[in-house]
Length: 404
Image 1 (cartoon, rainbow, N blue to C red):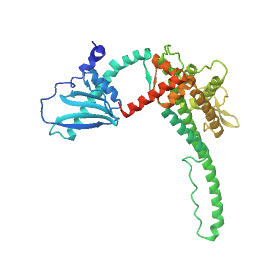
Image 2 (image 1 turned 120 degrees about the horizontal axis):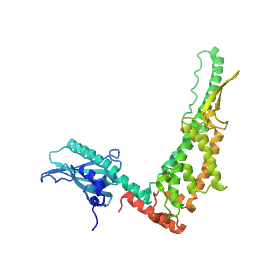
Image 3 (image 1 turned 135 degrees about the vertical axis):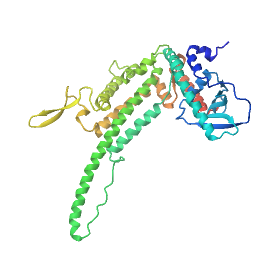
Image 4 (image 1 turned 90 degrees about the vertical axis):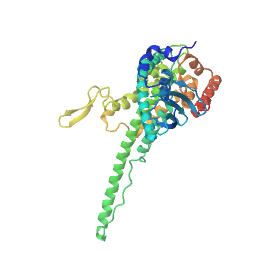
């Protein structure tokens, strides 16, 4: 006989069940009731699936899924019948209150229920979910959500903004206001001279603004790319590590991007991977790291020393290596183009992971599973992999639309 959820998670459930006394009491005696359907904002309950798990753990009834509905759970709270559901357009709560109840009564009831449910979710997180998660991670039963597209879009947004900035087409560019001519003919020569001065000043000012705007966006671009890179590598390891190996995924996810890169690509020998890895290290140390840590270069903070007869000169405390700490702006157009060229080459390398399987899968937006049987599918020959991927795409579309 299958164990109940309470028996399966008995030790972890004890405190949860003690805290859920307001739930699953006998319903009130039959009376005229009125149903209220209350949408639950995502900000109030961002993880409906966790709420579902908690309700099942305390004895609620699961009615399964059906058209446009991912799940529907019935229970009682304060002896009042309730149904919690996740549908295509969001979560909702149905409650049956006395006939004379009004909307304010229903909203107040829902607030009490959600407050109690959130308390139970915190207990379950500590006593049940966290231990179960650690156990699952240890044996590779883990799925990583694929957010590569969102992170890459952020990178492209800042890259495009930097290009516009350096080309003096950014949002900070301001047109020169028309100069108001004087009211007399005697002022015409003066006005012409002033106008030329103003136009020259405006041109110089716009070049300075363009340089700063390009530099600011390029700095954000680099930070966004490294975030995307680390996320991509975390997914891609499932396509390269032997399917029967123990990944130690918890440690891997906590490693720096450089360790992840070396786990996915062989950088021990000269070659394209090694060259691009070295280029990324240079970009990280020259642009990303100093600006991500208060403007101090980890190779030595920028300081200034007084030179007799000259004044103070900015120097590094150790070494005289090239560093953005010497400059007001991290990027100039040439440096930006060099970094973009490198990142484009890295993109090509990333797309090749697992014989191209990783690039196709990750760019499709599909989540990545780390169980052995899934990793074997990821590393299958091209035809078999393509069939497997299309089946997953079709299943994702059905799940998204809740077409069961």
